[in-house]
Image 1 (cartoon, one colour):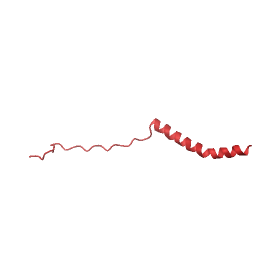
Image 2 (spheres, rainbow, N blue to C red):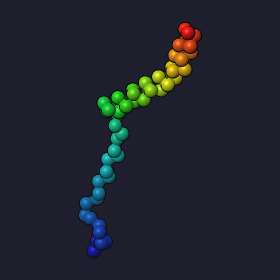
Image 3 (spheres, one colour):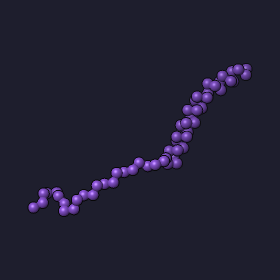
Image 4 (cartoon, rainbow, N blue to C red):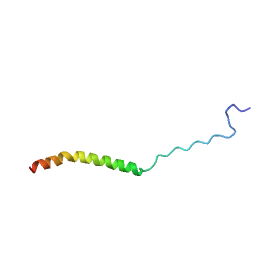
Length: 55
């Protein structure tokens, strides 16, 4: 007699979920905006320096 909970057919191994390749449109936009904010924050001191020299 088969063991309780056993099945005559072996279970198939579930396929390993693959990670998505690439980024979705919104992820790309968010990444670009974040990069733009970093660049602007880094450029502000330089812009203030140039503005101070012209006075």
